[in-house]
Length: 140
Image 1 (cartoon, helix red, strand yellow):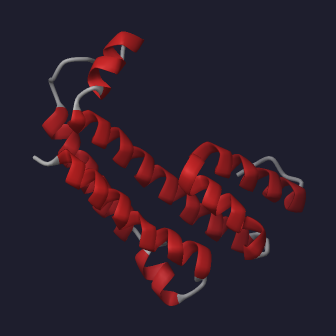
Image 2 (tube, helix red, strand yellow):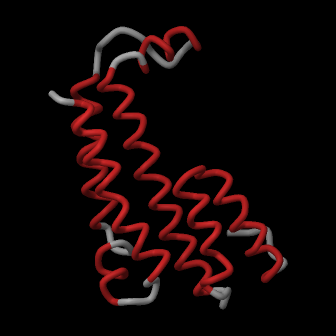
Image 3 (tube, one colour):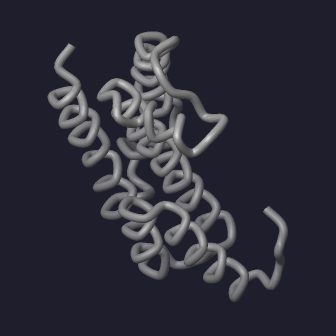
């Protein structure tokens, strides 16, 4: 299998979803394509396929050395990257819905969405700060 090509395809596949979340968060197309299960399911199927393909090889997750060995394998590296793509996009979609439900202006969260795309936890943290300043609640 060409894991380099699969990596490129997976990266390219999420860009339209992120564009819709940033530019057209309330449009019907965004709700159907990104806010539904469509993207997470498709990416999760890819993840599951890679998970099965990578099962049983060298390495593991029990020590740092084994983790390094695992991620030296292309199929595990792409598996890990797809993991990030799925969860970052899921969090981005949640942020848009959550902001809307708390009447947070979309333009205020656009930087958080972009940060989530490039540095997931930093984007989430920035959104949670925005959310806290608006709601004064620490609960999700």
